[in-house]
Length: 518
Image (tube, rainbow, N blue to C red; front, side, top):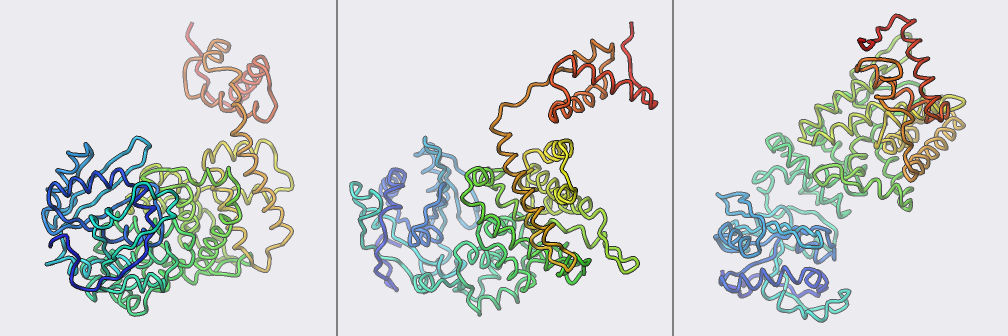
């Protein structure tokens, strides 16, 4: 296909020049290279949708398509730009260029061959109408005056290539598949309908929804990594609760998390008014409400935006923890003398989360974080149930929770808000709420303080008490650190005296203490 406009539906549209202006340097290099190679490029898919929505991502993903030889073009462009290159799909003609700018912005540029005989045919085989639009790259770039882009105040008239009603659906906030074979061509699109709905607060077209539900079992043939990526788009949105509820009603969520099915209609004790699954959904809703409440807190916001691994943030993993925190309840359900218990569900839940994380190909750090939050999610409640919170109990909680303490406390808040049985006492709920918020403040307050230096080290203990190196030394140092934190010791002399008492106590209780040979 030549660089001229296709002869089918072409709709005039006013688009802000801001996106082109923001990325003008790299786009200019791509345009110049394409000119030299006599290649007509088209911007396609999500990038067109995002330009129309004036949605600017921090690290842009830009999709181009061309008539053929996309892999060769991408390889030569990567060499020209001195950037990274990888073949994504040799058979279907797809190559990726990765370009990192000096300011840290990372561009992912994908180049694909037409998925059909021409551009119109290519757009027909994309996932949905709002992603089935294109822009002639050369003509669009030529419309931009480099001196006019400040703030995106100037606009220019551009021709949007839209043969399947993408603009109409974009205006209506609708997700609609344009091809009846769309889910057969790529079953991950079943999940993508819901992730797009979550990201843009769009509704799914009835016919598209019905077809997705009918084809849902095809998701079982999709690689877990691709399903995970769509799942994290839902987790990154503000509509996780609504979309998880929709996925559940469609019978899709249990295909991703078969562990949730035994939670359905599993009744709980008098502290709960909902079964385990509905309580879990309610916890997700309360958690998202909590995130909104804390949105103006700079400390919490910065904490939640920290990347844990693979571009996934604490915020997204917190939402996943909300969904999985009671996953161990079905396996620990006991009903004795009309009393329902789930003793040890946090421990079993932590084990199940490990399996789920491995299945979704999460990183070791993500799995560790999710396991720790699941295992510790009851601990704040135990602290709140005590009339007084001792310094020792508080120290041990923060020590054991580490950097994940705020996530544990926030999950406990959401969990408590979703617990509304007839035995739940309002006074107890208010005490729990106050304590969780106080501990969150204390976490950030302690972070800003200079960390206390140990009063003694392992060498001091070995020398003073003539001990041989052993695991006992580490245990002594941890106990002394706790005593220092709660104000029981403040000098080196007091620390050594306390160490002596601990060693004597262990000896009197029959524990073996390895002395240094003379």
